[in-house]
Every structure is written in C-alpha cells, then in structure tokens.
Image (cartoon, rainbow, N blue to C red; front, side):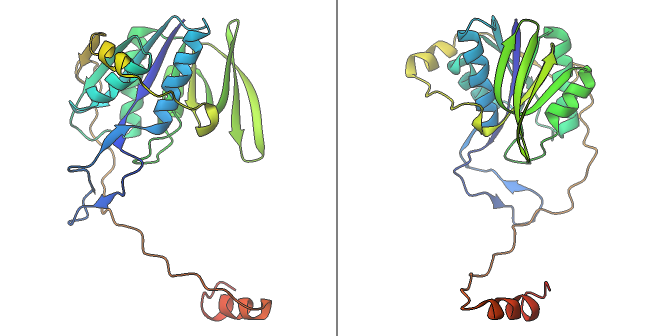
Length: 249
C-alpha cells in the first residue's frame, strides 16, 4: 500500500508573526520556518503504519518555493521513502493546492492520502476536504486514531461532542489532528541519509493546473490588543459592567 503525505513550509509555531508595514501580508523575512505541525503528525502516522507493515511506500509532497525542499528533506529524514516538489513562488490557495495534489495522486495512485487538518499560517482547514471531493474519495477529517483493516481504514475523529469512528473504503483522504500522535525526534544519521533519497520536481504547468488566485487580500492587520481583565466583587457589579461598560446586555 502506498501512502502520500502532503507537507507545507510555514512560519515556525514558536515565532511571533509580524505584519508588513503596508498591511499587504505577513512578514516572513529572516523568520524561522519549519514543517507545519499538523503535517508533521501526518508524516509520523504514515511512518508508524509502515513500521507496522501496513504501508509499503511513503511519498512526501510539498508545494511552494525552492526552500520547500528543506521541508521535504525533513519528511524524508522522518521516514518517507521519496519526495515530490511542485516548485512555484505563486500564492497558493486551498483549491489550487487540492488540484495540484489531485494531479500528483492521479500519477502516483496512492491508497492513503494523509494531510494535516490545517496549516497554521492561513488556518483554512479546506484542502483535505477539497482533495477528497476532487478525487471522489472517502474522507476522515480531524483524525485522532487511524487503523488499517483489510481494505478499509477505521478513523476515529474528534467532533464537538467527543469522538466518532468511521469506516472508509480505500482510497481515502485523512486529515491529522493534534492528538493523533507525537512526532519522533529526527536523528542526525537519518538527516544525512535523507539527502540521498530521491526528490522529483514538477511545476504547476507540468501538472496542467492553473494556480491563479481567485481571492484578493484587501488588508492584513494585527488583532487589537485586549484590555487587562478586572476582578469584580459581586454579581451585581458584574452585571453593571456587562450592561454599562461592555454593553452586551
């Protein structure tokens, strides 16, 4: 069984994001970048399935500029067998990403497609669902447990009321949630070995996909700073503040 895992290069989750002075976008100049945390969880899950003998090959895919190759090398060091880089400096919206991944999936014919539930830069949480629709494949979103049984995959997913388990026919698209697993620490020998693993490159035009943005960003702004909280001495004082200061009642 082949698993395809999508990974994205984003601003490291420990970095405080800054907005450009002109409000056109987020400033990523001289900022530490890393693999999207949810995608890292997706890679880890694919590797664990391979170690359990359920998956025979893991293909990591990343879309973006030249430096996305670093993210792919990290995935290879974690245990992916080979990588595909769709190189573009253009702005990629979720639908364009889903179309590019569909084109790769059509070439590779994976039985399992693993993605992070969302990227921490745009928080769109759309790509996995769009990809499943384009492929006309089963989907299991917000996965906290994945089990491969015969020709099905059992996905326990997190929902508002707790958890539910769905049985999906293969091929299936699964988006990883935070509690699916804890990614392993990558050792230096694995990082060195990853440099020798195959990495194939394509452009969007090679795949026949138009990535022209369908949306226009009007302005990017930092959220307003919250006022310091206050402690009230009674319910009556709380009601008074909610009514006269917050004006919510």
